[in-house]
Length: 262
Image (cartoon, rainbow, N blue to C red; front, side, top):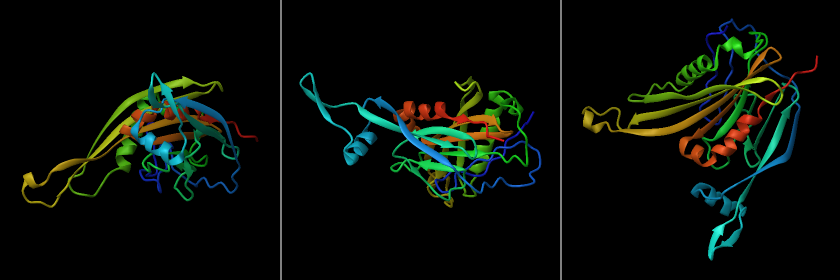
């Protein structure tokens, strides 16, 4: 049973990545030389058009229409369209919002971000088969133990050398589920808040006013296949999560790990 996870730092859109592997020593990197993707856009959902941020985006994209309801003008339902990405080389698939942009060169197997909210993004990371062999998610322990390791790694990633920086973190949920492919997946949610002083070099305490820098939710889905550990990670500001929870959970629920042909 593995008792720890190791990640590569991923907190910004250009560097977000996670490599999960147990305590076994690493002997080689996983470097795929060929990538094959299949992308389709056959999934669609509808949700109420009611949040300010989406209102602005919708006006920019001209993606909403007006309708009359009980004598008042109101926004009609907005259509949220998804694409499906299937990676046949590494063995995973998921759905993502169609307007999200793929970022090349990010330190992850694949990386997408919202074009308007840069702190809202997703990535997929895969453990190296040369450094570890996973038989099942039980190698990580139960979901609660995996969540503790994930949270510890997040805090390690977000360590800062700045004076006066403080991080608060908590595990919101940790669960397992059997998907329609018959495989088990762990779903983990954590919240991390960052606080910092506006004048960390001030001599007097009253001159060092602490403010909240950011408040984010991290949603991880873990799966095991091909003797490898896969992670889909979503990062989103808490205020945006409130607006887009249904869409983000659709992305989480869509993640699948697939058996590679010999």
